[in-house]
Image (cartoon, rainbow, N blue to C red):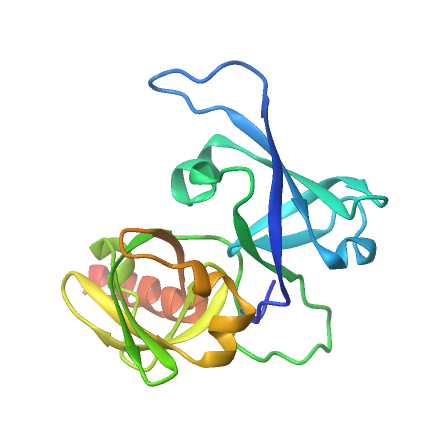
Length: 209
């Protein structure tokens, strides 16, 4: 479990294939090696949010401060991890501990899918960003509700049939990969888990009527 407050920006230093070569119908498992300052706080088996994706630490290189994570085909299909290149920067958050302060909202690290940045506009020192997404994700979003974008807990401004808008404050821009965002870029999206549970409950309730 995470809180959607990015703790640092990490860097992809290597991407290695695992198992068989990918085909047109099957993706390949990959191992991501990511450099981060907080690597010394982690142990094998710990959960770390990489761009909002909950991944398990499988290897630690204390000398270089590099952690390794395995990403399976289902994860690659649902997220932007399949688009990673060596040298890319990523949002990092270590999992919360019982009793920790939750500065954002409850984020599972279970990405619902990706969205595409369609518009970026400056508003003084802030940024207004519109993100196109599928209805399967948009149905969970509400005006002034929560959404996790690449692991960042962000307040939704407005939801339409095809997209939604958010604003990034100067601190978020400086402390996260928002500073690298460009129109056309794919971002990981996770709707508020509480909202998804309520939606699922109401769907089942309606089916019984």
